[in-house]
Image (tube, rainbow over all chains, first blue to last red; front, side, top):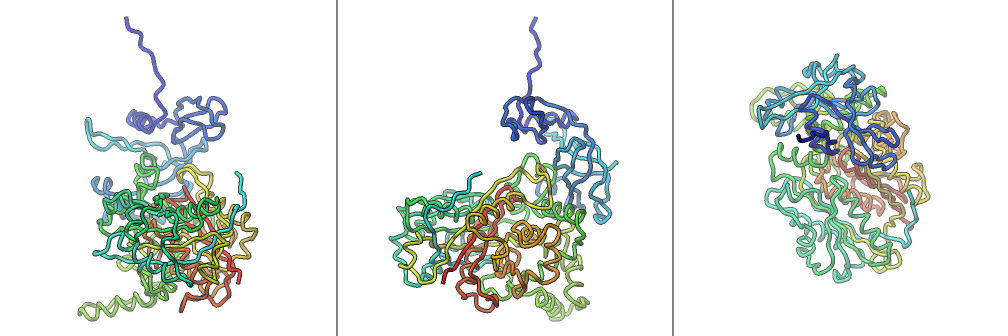
Length: 143
Length: 421
């Protein structure tokens, strides 16, 4: 009987995206100095250690900065966004202290002056496309 | 980090730039040739091109903008300088100043005495959405762009963090745009050589000529608040908060300090150089200043042995209006949270206590990304030598600074310049 062993996924953008598709926001943690990295890193920038482990984040945070995008990049235009249908992107500070860029949902993109830095958020995932072409994007939803 | 003084002095003895704008019939090479010819004419005692020993070119993305790679030897050849070594330097929008720093280091090392530094970018071939996508490659694509960010979006996020921390409103940012367009109106090389007042009057006159109802803007503040005249790009940044898409080039001639008198009696000495790097915007402790800019500035000040109080004028990287506010604080002109007030009070105007972007800045002069860091030096050269014409500042300029940022501050290069006579 073949033994099934769990191998540690490499600390790459592909692994990060694979975890997102599984509904997990994963960070790396340095097992030598304990520093948490989001996005995940293969080398700890604080102590330069190469000893890391994956750790799931709390998914709880607050809005540190944001924008409502009217002039969108091509891949967002293809999803129906743009001048007539703006969307919110932001930088989210997790309760663990690390920050990450994400789409922001649960706020009114037509009233940007009412969106506040400091708004409490929880992790959310946006999946676009189906089957082989499905891609999951990180989002945070206003509580 | 070590910050040693230059082992050998470096001086600028010539500077030129092309006109900035949208030029359908010119490629990046053509624009660089124009800048190079202007540079040659600017050398007071003349330059024998065979004296030039090395060439560094700042260029962000000729590959995607023009479908042309391997740009440096091509441009060297276009101005007749092959077979000297030529290398392209890429640091997004800080490519130009990074190329300048390579030139400074090449001369300071003693390997060469005479260096050509250039910057060139041809951006207007592509539709706006493709330009947006090309500029986005300067960000951390899998983590930042996947969140839907654009470059205006990043700086908008910096603006919202700044507004939440300090008392700034989006209206305060308009002061930067108004001031830089006022300066650009006095710059014959600027893409937008027109003040916002004249721009508005032009729009009204155009409507009347076409028999349409004349817009009812009472003043430029009405105009800037009008969603049709000044549309939102990425809240809170509107069109007039953003630098334009531009074609342009610039060129500098650097020489070893002891050779400067062979070329001019009025060289501009580079006495401080600093450069730093940083992680993506979300991976930083604070969003309201750029730590790479603060570090690059402190390195340059230390090397030059001067402080922010000594610097008379600065050309800073105003890719967006909020970027100028943050830059004015990062280089130490104003305390954190005071930059937007300084702009409102006219401190950074051409006639103010701390003039910033007398050229019109990236905002009005235009922002051909790889050329911008070199074109900033062209303005400093003109102002320090008293050759800036209508936009000459009313005070003597013995010390000046340039501040050139890549992306959201993942790279920053600062230089300090001195005129000694």
